[in-house]
Length: 149
Image 1 (cartoon, rainbow, N blue to C red):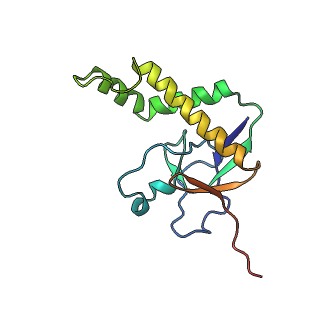
Image 2 (cartoon, helix red, strand yellow):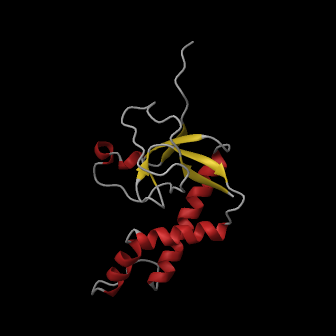
């Protein structure tokens, strides 16, 4: 299965790079950004699912031992361990309840996992295996070493 993993390749080729993830860990395309993503760097980061930290470089990898079910479980576990699941459950149990198209939290969490799977697949389908990627908000592009003629 094609997935996105944290990589240190090409780190440092762009000003402001950071790599707080574990080399090779599964990363997500985008989770949430603050109101100043250019200042803090969250708008350029690939969130790591194991470390719960981020990196500015990710790589398209083919991991044949990983199934879609495994990736789905990893995303679900990440949502749970990083506090998102509790946040959504607490919001649903509050007086405000859930708003939007979902009847319950589990349905909403399943849809969120689906969305992450779709984003990962979309990015992986757009680039060959081994491509080192960077992002700026919702724009994802391949990173290459600058070369002189």
